[in-house]
Length: 145
Image (cartoon, rainbow, N blue to C red; front, side):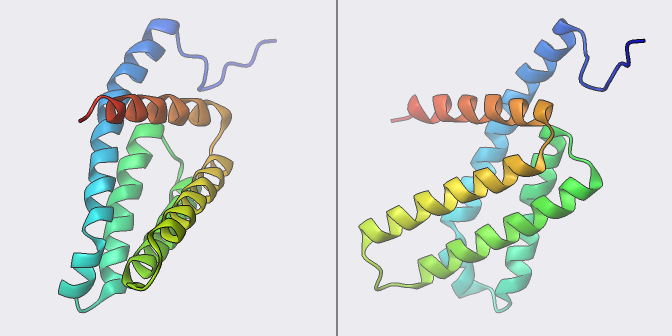
């Protein structure tokens, strides 16, 4: 007996879903870049950095959850992962005496660890969708001046 799962959508439904997800993920990536570029400014303007990071993590996690269809447990784990990432990014940006190349190396390592940890939270179909969305985001960034 064949057991159908949530991952067995007809091809055209999957194609439509992926196409709409690409557009939505690009918007999420843009939101993430705005959040990360404003971390230093927000740290100076916001008296409660923890609350600011929490709010940003919630927005980021909700956006990602809607794009890759997370369950509640995955949502909670991803939110904690996002809080950790945003906290690390803010602490690195506040270290004004850090050499740029060391900061770049640390950021690359942090992003690789984040992506690895996040992919570990996802089911195989979600991982595939995330990779497709990530590839679309990278292609979009490659076309910008």
